[in-house]
View 1 (cartoon, rainbow, N blue to C red):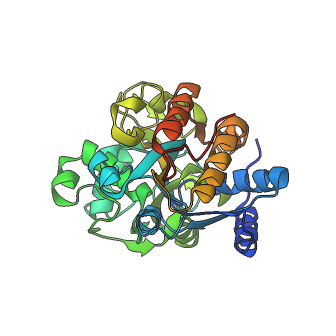
View 2 (tube, rainbow, N blue to C red):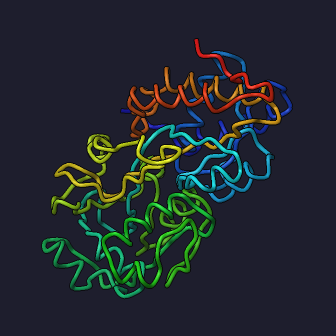
Length: 348
């Protein structure tokens, strides 16, 4: 299996910025979590259609702000907006793809998957209650591992982040202490650690800092050759971050149960489930000021749903199930319309 390198992603990003002057280009901003797959889709789409994508990978918080300010055609967020906020701003919301969030560490001599960690221990590390790698709680989970007595350097997001929302949602679910003292949101008051911007920033900081731990979307761990940990899931089973484990967590999701398909996939039951699985969503106006631009964006998303599954799987993202795609595209027809009440995008 081949993975797009960080340098390749950066090159695609540069190409996006160069093409922003073209009228056909689609403008979007937000989550860094799906950036590798959006970049890969956009590259293939431009080669096929000649239309480009100017996507700013600035974090979910930034994406929400930009769409609410009408400065982009679509926003992207890994934190789904609740129904009342969607209604307030007149926004439609739909999921594009799913993936896994993984703890990444930098310990000399430790390879990917060598270390196992559970939710309560992870919460204590990010609370600052566990400060050394040879702490008894970590040793108990890894009795045969050679753990140094080095201090743990915690790295977390500094920007408003859907990855942070899903990570802290999981920690709140497994740790009452975390839930009461820190809670879950796109931005939280971190008890300890250093902040970095974007999945890219966390990945780079962990790569450069001995003894560090952070959390990133799985594709960033692979692209940056970071050491990820295994985890103990809700069923008490040790699992590795794989497409199969992410799919197992997503398998039982009832996407229609929440406004805007806003289902949280953290800490799902199942022996094979990865505990920090997450979706990522697109936000668009139901009555856009520029219907032609919205039509171009929906044309791209339709193309990605129909042609992008293999590319997503190559980066260990999970494509949306066909049933969900069908429901999303029905929503496009009923909810995203021009001022005359006509759908902005006609399905083929």
